[in-house]
Image 1 (cartoon, rainbow, N blue to C red):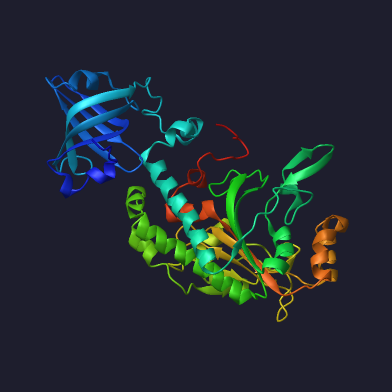
Image 2: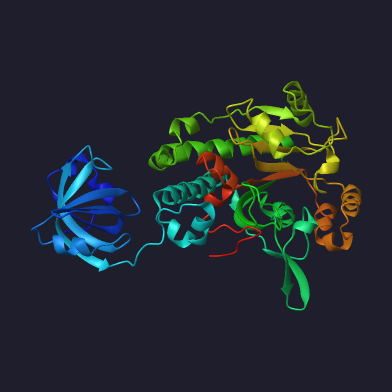
Length: 428
């Protein structure tokens, strides 16, 4: 008899058939004359009823939560069952009888992080990981359709591209090096060869932040494009997010239902997205009773307020130059601002994407580096990209965990990654 996965059994065409499946005990209830076993695998759950007097009953009595087993039974429909179908068990073959499972009534966040290696088996985490996998698939699909080349940059780097104090320092033989926060400096070198490139990579930021939207190790999708101006870069970011939302809604609707996200919410996420400047954002905030001094970066509080005005992701452009990274050029029409943008998620109001045009002027870059306290000599390889065949170009980075936090309606970003790393946690 061919082994079937549970989702293959949960169909009207299987009613009345004897099938064989396997998995782990998700729930179990033992009575004198019956044992109810809810079996799970990677696809779904199904309840099996094991009656006293059958060959399977003695084996069923031995089972514990998370025991692994093979089971054969006859399929029938039952509205009372968790997924609408039940198996009348004929035979059970225990593969492993699990010890007492430690996850019971204590579902506090810290405890679940301590036993993350086990909590990943939960229906919630399984659904999140399926959506996460689909997001990665959608990113590759989108960029390859747009004829982008995948390119990998080094993780071990000599210096930073953004904020030096938040770099993780490592010992690289007899010299110091750092873990990369972004591929950008290396990507800018590669675009003069391939012109259109993207990557999905791990990134590292040594922020001592304990918020629900920060991680020390996270995954990012980054893109760099030659000959591309700011508006075109924004169009690309818009297209990427819309594509991800459409694909997840259509292909992981069951997972979204488990997470409490209506797939229809994501199907509505189509281009165009609203676009406002930083100065316009400040005016909107002031009208709503939140006054922000011009020149300050937007905090979570302000981003959440801006998000409340819209039902789609929102682009905020032209932030103050002095608050931006050294490589973001001044806007010709308003030199106080930079040619840059953030994309803010609706509902939760957090920045998902940051992007910009890249400054082509060596003098300007050197000045910005000095103002940021960086050694210009550490960036000679980068400045070479401006000396030899420089062209207008732009790029952005998408924080995949933040996107997942929004899509999956998660209270904390820590649930958007299998094993989160924070200032207080590097285990399990």
